[in-house]
Length: 60
Image (tube, rainbow, N blue to C red; front, top):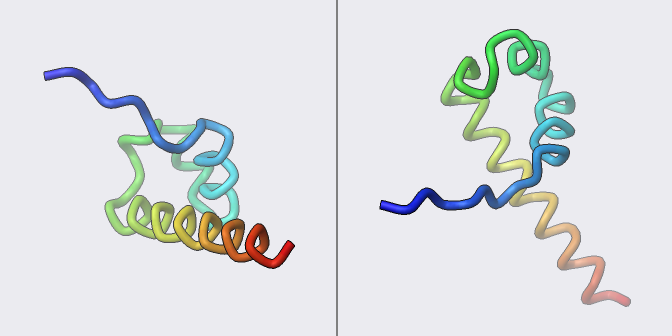
Protein backbone atom coordinates (compact mmCIF):
# COMPACT_ATOMS: atom_id res chain seq x y z
CA UNK A 1 0.00 0.00 0.00
CA UNK A 2 1.39 3.39 -0.99
CA UNK A 3 2.02 5.88 1.75
CA UNK A 4 -0.03 9.04 1.52
CA UNK A 5 1.68 12.40 1.43
CA UNK A 6 0.92 14.69 4.33
CA UNK A 7 -1.81 17.26 3.89
CA UNK A 8 -0.36 19.81 6.31
CA UNK A 9 3.09 21.27 5.88
CA UNK A 10 5.64 20.80 8.62
CA UNK A 11 5.58 24.55 9.26
CA UNK A 12 1.79 24.58 9.73
CA UNK A 13 1.92 21.63 12.11
CA UNK A 14 4.62 23.31 14.17
CA UNK A 15 2.70 26.61 14.24
CA UNK A 16 -0.43 24.89 15.49
CA UNK A 17 1.49 22.81 18.05
CA UNK A 18 3.02 26.02 19.43
CA UNK A 19 -0.40 27.70 19.52
CA UNK A 20 -1.94 24.75 21.37
CA UNK A 21 0.98 24.42 23.79
CA UNK A 22 2.46 21.00 23.05
CA UNK A 23 5.35 21.91 20.75
CA UNK A 24 7.86 21.11 23.51
CA UNK A 25 6.63 17.50 23.47
CA UNK A 26 7.08 17.39 19.69
CA UNK A 27 10.64 18.65 20.05
CA UNK A 28 11.49 16.10 22.75
CA UNK A 29 9.62 13.02 21.52
CA UNK A 30 8.59 13.71 17.94
CA UNK A 31 5.05 13.67 16.58
CA UNK A 32 4.49 10.17 17.93
CA UNK A 33 4.85 11.50 21.47
CA UNK A 34 1.77 13.72 21.44
CA UNK A 35 -1.52 12.60 22.94
CA UNK A 36 -4.42 11.58 20.71
CA UNK A 37 -6.39 14.51 22.11
CA UNK A 38 -3.64 16.94 21.05
CA UNK A 39 -3.57 15.43 17.56
CA UNK A 40 -7.34 15.81 17.32
CA UNK A 41 -7.18 19.40 18.50
CA UNK A 42 -4.47 20.09 15.95
CA UNK A 43 -6.66 18.78 13.12
CA UNK A 44 -9.64 20.73 14.45
CA UNK A 45 -7.58 23.95 14.51
CA UNK A 46 -6.28 23.33 10.97
CA UNK A 47 -9.87 22.96 9.76
CA UNK A 48 -10.87 26.17 11.53
CA UNK A 49 -7.96 27.99 9.88
CA UNK A 50 -8.94 26.67 6.45
CA UNK A 51 -12.57 27.72 6.97
CA UNK A 52 -11.47 31.20 8.05
CA UNK A 53 -9.31 31.48 4.93
CA UNK A 54 -12.22 30.41 2.71
CA UNK A 55 -14.56 32.95 4.34
CA UNK A 56 -12.05 35.77 3.88
CA UNK A 57 -11.51 34.81 0.22
CA UNK A 58 -15.27 34.88 -0.44
CA UNK A 59 -15.56 38.38 1.04
CA UNK A 60 -12.97 39.90 -1.27
